[in-house]
Image 1: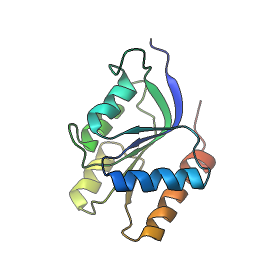
Image 2 (image 1 turned 45 degrees about the horizontal axis):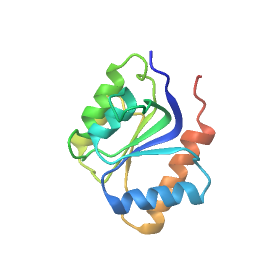
Image 3 (image 1 turned 90 degrees about the vertical axis):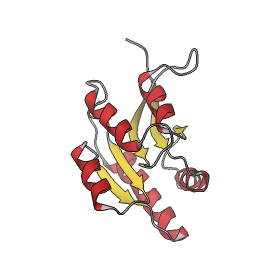
Image 4 (image 1 turned 180 degrees about the vertical axis):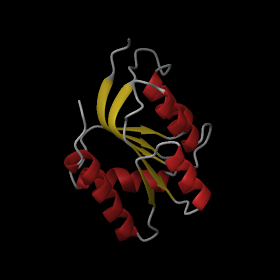
Length: 145
């Protein structure tokens, strides 16, 4: 078994503006120290399951913030792969998406998402939502070790 690198959050987001805002919000509020970013679904799978760059260990995040509409591999496929893996099946996955579509929400929960959050449109609301998500999943939520 490969040794894993521990991180607080695996952030899977392809929108550069949303990515920058999420990172700034989490860091400004001192919610997460170790954040690993994947800008597409294929990279997220590499980070979680290996097969990435030479010498790069797979990561074990405390929580995954997962966008749905991703290039290469969709967020729903990433979620399905996480839930199908015995080692990662209980990993908390929070879908953070701009989609309010009922089929996306239903399918996310059917595949085992722990939470589904629609990205707020307004800047302050977006920052508040991300800050609260980070605080809840990293500070309040109790996870087994």
